[in-house]
Image 1: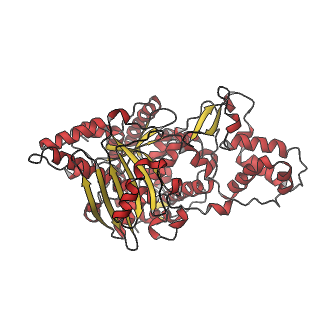
Image 2: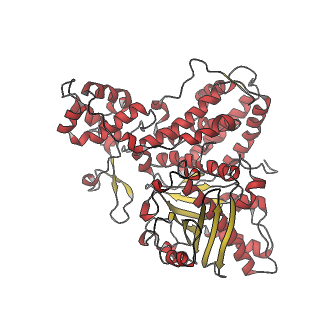
Image 3: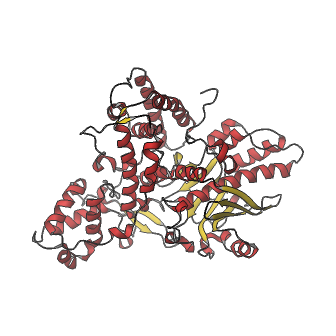
Length: 566
């Protein structure tokens, strides 16, 4: 290890009241700890093998394919059912009933009987029936303009237009990747003893990674079917420029509120990684060189980042200015003085936007795999441990916790319409989370407990009317409506990053901030909000394909290779 680590007394984790705001969380970027990168490092380290077991697709792109990932102990197979969907039926909406392709990740290698069983169910998605042999379920639609262009170009013997590829970045876009027991797939507990499933969302990440492989094989196959004499395959570098798109809406947002212990562990792992980097007293020349070489690649990534939404366009403009400001500052920055990364972080907090600060944090982590990568083993959570309420605690102690954790919420006038403007509920049709206007829609009776700040303020008001020596158990017997809030409060006492320190139902709240926070830990890039309630992203863009993992894998794959123009 080529660094000396010191621990100045003043260095601590960033405080939760600063870090867990919606504006900060909505500026997170992928890091070395992201779940996609964790998956690929594991596949490389354990020398996983990949085989195409079936590819029975006709000239219209209809059929079935099976891709198996073979690890040291288990084999997992992506079963893909390809469709030729009419354009008028293509939709990103969760209410869609047909897609260009549907998928499941199967535990093992399916036989003919399993394929036929799944052929009758997976294309139906939620309307079908699956078993514990299925570990995930997904669907995707083509990005039609780019899809047609790539097929046509390859069929003629040409490579696709690089500008068009960069402007979209994927050939198919998933509209859901279900796992962990949803709609009948195997519950997470079935897989917890498997090494390759340790860490959050590893099954889902493997599903998307194999979907990307199938999509690229399919587009090359259709080009060859169109013109067998002239068709060519994608150039390997161009091929890696394609990821898998994803459209994510409000269904994902409540996850951040509903899994406080898990979210704490994600954030805490990131903060521990950052603290370890900040505590490096002397940065080696090699580390500094790695950091400086990555900076222009980050800049190019931002240049390639497309969005049509005014909010993201403004953030991108600010991020570009931040990176230019950083590059100028680094020309005179002395990396040889003690604790360079701490000094750089302090400078960023004074001179960069939240987006720029979080981008710099991701970049600062890159040169330190030995310090950081092992922290991925700490990002799971046994959430059952946080369910029990300590009824012996006094009301006075619970009040003090409220004052410490929810100080921001206790300062809000919750009788104000703007502070209480929205309500979270579950749609009847798709059983998906929705966010409605409380004073314009008849939804209050169906509200879900996804506004911890307001609920904490209500509990605090009732606590103030009870004798301070009363136990929490006695208080909750009289006020059972506060059970979930008391539980959250006690949980946040032990897990400092468990709670969003912001109003999740105010008029100005943007759900995309919650979406981005979660998706950044997945490792997503190129966030493109389509409203304040749903966002498109790109997954695995730049990553090596399965047949390249042992020869072409680069751990810095999220950052684009510089073009001649860059």
